[in-house]
Length: 358
Image (cartoon, rainbow, N blue to C red; front, side):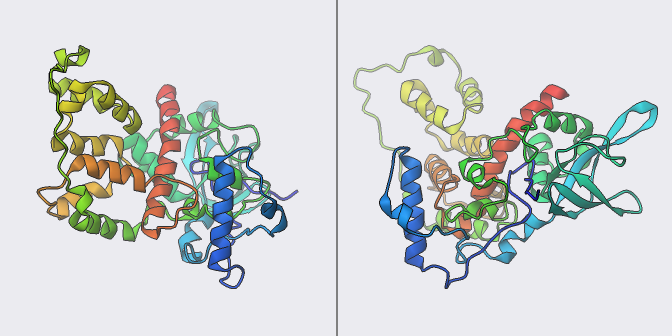
């Protein structure tokens, strides 16, 4: 029986990316379909008769993705193990190839390279005694960044990585037990489903040429990022709490380990933390620690003179909101980075398992 397998890192398939034709559905029809599905996702008990009457749209919006955007999904590599000396195995990363069907990969391996066939997530073969794990190369580079802060495979322990990933196989033979996101989970079936409204999931996550220009324009022209913080009227309040006994540098270090939502909660709960984290120095550092997937900010900082009155706390809040992966995204400058952020979340969980194996 034919079926699809999915990238072990991002959860997206290697085939079946169906892009609609402008004549398939009008802009209004696509918009209504996305809005209807969005409402149903936000309300578990939502029912609507029109949803039963209309033919569902099962293609991506051609205004948001094209064949060039999704070409990265069709090329597959894999991580597997080969027999080594003394009955041991050694992990390897294959060359490029393609997904044939029914869980079968055709990739290049060895020197000189030859076309070899493997079964995704399945039983081993003479060439690879254990299951092989398929992935897109750009997803592998994102994983390498989470593990080593570089994209060089030589800096990672492939044997430990293989063991970590194998331990997270989901038992269905199609992906790993990783938080790929609800939009990807809905698309994973016997075959990959091209769901309208989830186009960001198939936008290239590292080749994002429009992102830097978008950031430059926002930083230079968005006046809402320059608003000065409102002064607090403390009255007779004294910002005393357990954090108040610590030097600001120690509080900064503690905060650097918190995700954005937890940081927001802490500043609301602790007046002292709220006061000492109002300066730009803290938020410049927090952007780097909380958004490691947004490496373009470092490029921009090196190549662009940021406005002197830029408010970095507001910049963080703006970036956190606009890059969040969510159903119905339509800003093409942000869809790729939203996909990268989604993949980074899955890689961080895999990174924890990798550290345990090491």
